[in-house]
Image (cartoon, rainbow, N blue to C red):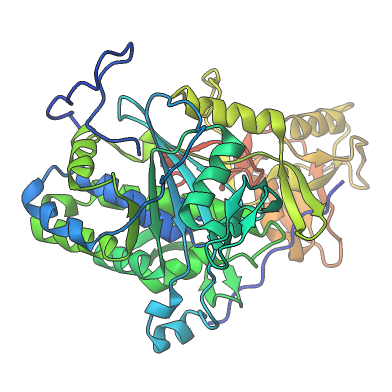
Length: 500
């Protein structure tokens, strides 16, 4: 059984608008006039999506028409052949690139951005906007994913390469946006309609002009590599600190998977901020935000002002509850490839289910029946990480087994071997714990209403429950954060503050 995590060290310190034109004879309903539309640093991808969300204010052409020239254009789909069939809805490949060379020396030092910029993509996401413009599905593709490129010409050396294995984020260095799109399409069989590329500068400016984004954390976050230092609680992050939050990958053993979860959380919070604050109803503020975004974005030639406005009008009612997030399911975490290194190998069946949903314009999450009874209590530690020994502190036969079974049913890793306590006259149920595992103890006590927490020095990682005469029931609990595993789908309104 796994050892429960110790408590972390505390840090020191829209109604839809004008009907879209017809695309010609088709069995599908008409869509807004959008021509077929890439996360290490999640905020750049977040910022790009915010262009779409911000356009939902419907302020109009007068504000945006002068900003089109701010977007750097890239011919991302030049001479592409044998592409996947087009599905319903719109797929945007959002990529995050470095761009630290555009940030001041002072800011680079403050936010730990030293060194030369990386000519690769540290963050890659497919964002699917449904045909009815009422749902956004965001799928993160890990930067270290095992990939195989199609035949291509190296954009730096001009050398022709046969298809070969590499890490997904290296495709950009070899062949830029075109090779990145082709590689993603080959791996997913999802046709990419638009390409957006965002860097550090755009991300920080956008967060600042929005007045910051609110983030919640159930435990302290400290990463010496990025300088992130957040106590547990709720925080409003401005641009630089937000960049640290989405870049951090040395907080726990989950590395990139953990970072992608925080990136998705930040994206949901940014959408919540942009759509609920009233900022979008202020033309000047809308212009400032849009300028901050577009000034550092590269996009394909087909994604312009008209497309943004048409899509924005169709998404006026968009909100965090309209969004869902997932990381492509991983089948093998440390897949060694000669000449490439350690990669992440996707789970063929589960990843196909995710990409099939994108192709068919369906929600990522499987339909689940509405749970009966009260909602589970949110706790800081997943019960599956907490080992428990149950003791019967009464003369009531079978009480220990009843408590053990109930705790196991809600996810706790019990020993399945309850025993009698030394003291058989216990009235109030006791949770005995080593102080080093106090967060685990609080999570366990939440499942035992009326129980007493009792610290026991050097008890070790296994928590002890001494069932007393006053024991009534075990209530269901679930972790405050979405599950860490890849492939898990979580709705946007479940990861913003107030829904922990």
